[in-house]
Image (cartoon, rainbow, N blue to C red):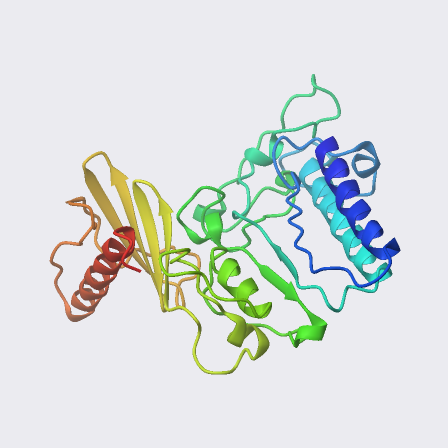
Length: 320
């Protein structure tokens, strides 16, 4: 991952030139998108040789030993890059005035994906017999996989389940009034950063017809308990499938040729998406509308799913 070192040096050089320049400097925008943490996992030697190893003592190996997990080493590399950038801003006297945003564009990786790299002592070393590597089914993960990046969430990168796209979003801006250590559980998408950053900078919002899926969450960022969340729903597209978050509900429409399977989850009661509240079925059409169900609860779930499918069709038709 030489690219990350070059990227970090370019950003650090930019901050250093601002620090050494005379007179007031214009506002800046810097997007530092690292390759870490991403497969293949080939961390630099100084992180590979660091004490970023996992002790394993399970039935999967003959005896306790230290196993190098390159995914963890690349997390350490990313941490070092972020730390260097923050230190450079602090040295330039611009840290308090700078809006710093840290996020990921996808959820955690599966155990199999984490093995794409030089995690074995040598290419000839056989792979360990991974056993329990399906957190979405068991809630557990083999210690040979390193940290479970999706925690208790179902799915991994590329999935429509929460583990595939639910990520932390960290924002710091001391001079602008973002409370240090504050927490907010609102539903937001990375597309909302566009409108939010414009709003924080005091600039005009996106023009009509531009970035219609971007909603500013400035008010809740500065005052997390002030009023209601900026958005009530969020569509996660994965054409031709999709998922829609609305309040406590999550509707997933999975395309199978000309048919669709629909799943409804209550994320407040079931954040791991273990129980589909709709009966197994395949339905025709683009909206993934569920069939008739019996029982009072089933009827409520059917109505919720139908309303959400209609909303998804509206968004997909660009009627946000």
